[in-house]
Amino acid sequence: MNAKSKKIERQREIDLVLTKMFAYYQTEVYDAGVLDLYHQALEGYRIEEIRTACTTHIKTSKWFPKISEILDLMPNQHVAQIESTARAQAAMVLQMIRTMGSRFGPYWADPITDALMNSRWKWTSLCETSTSENEVWFIKEFIVSYVALADQQQAGVGMLGAPEKLKQLAVGLFKGVKNNPHVFDDLKAALAEVKG
Image (tube, rainbow, N blue to C red; front, top):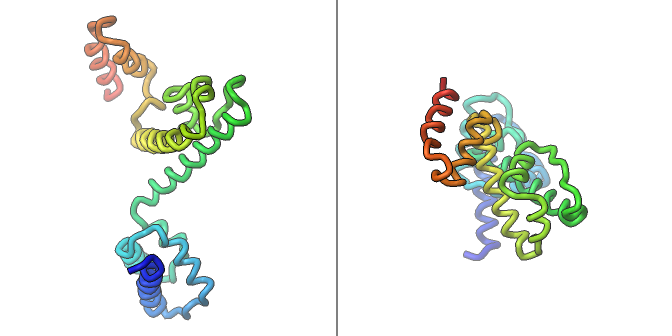
């Protein structure tokens, strides 16, 4: 089956799900333009996910779903939104490198970008090593780091909101235990303090 055939088959599957929704809600079938909007919005999701979201919507609403209502019921929608934000933030960092260079360190309004640019990457080093070949790597690494930090922040853990003593101990671990043989005792005490 070629790509065009797969796309047509997928559209038929989505049309079948939507037709059942139209019948259930006793709604007239929208015109082809509106159906095309549904197809475009649901493009990245598996048909099983679409069916599950529509079934959930039927159980919870007495009105035909808008596209956004179906998308809100999709699994991993939150992750997709974070990845989209991360991609936009990575593009903004690269744009700042091109326009500002290493002369001035920019202000990052996004708190996660600010945390990454002050811990994971240093501005001057990033500017000095930035090449078109490195940009693809940077975008991938930035997205992975951004999503991980956003997840930690959402869970209430991570370096963004950690107590200062815990931050210092975590940084100290990487400087070597030889400099502070009691670092693990200090770490246990700080963790107990955070839990308590």
